[in-house]
Image (cartoon, rainbow, N blue to C red; front, side, top):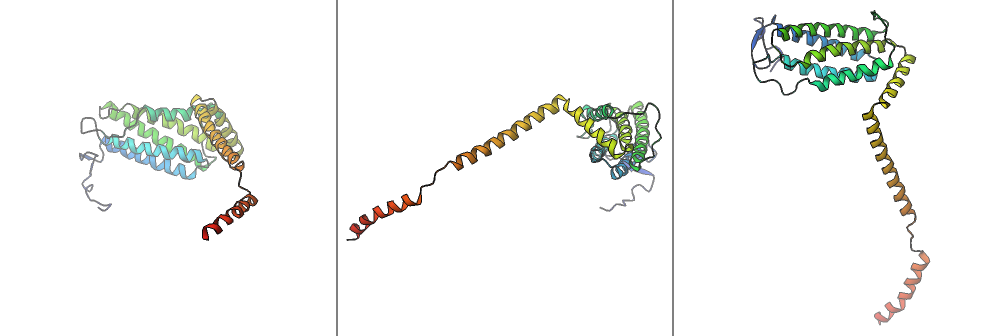
Length: 244
């Protein structure tokens, strides 16, 4: 099947369950804004200097694809998609917001981003997410969507993009300080400490096993060659008698 289906030439498009709606429909407007936000996020990911930020943005883009699938099935117009955005994804965003707020010295007022290319792209993505959020609010008001976590996710997402942009504005030295602060924040997380302990215990067990293997292998005594030759000489008369 080719890219150009020509089915949209009349100004209508198909939603996920096959329903045909005009391209100015509130759902298609929201989907278009979501697509735009995802594109800007891709641009921000490409220009970011932070590997961690790149990984976060990539996961966000995957979440937005899930939201797009949900928006493509209006309430009461078919079976909802299997994958939906839930509280888990919202908590995931909140975790990073909390970490970065703890590590960064956020400015008290409005910020005019532009010192770094990456921060500018993140800021554009943030405004695009805000626009998407407003259009989704309209869908919610018109009773077209049911999942309340979509709006929560979009709202938290714009907050996260703001703090990520603040991080991107920092120079290399300041970003290293933030990385150390983030690590200290993770150390205070009970779950992080738990898994660190488990992994450390497994590594210690592996090291101990290797040391024991070397110890027992080193203490395994080989039979001396002189003793082996002596036994062979003792066996020679017996072989001669048998031959006779």
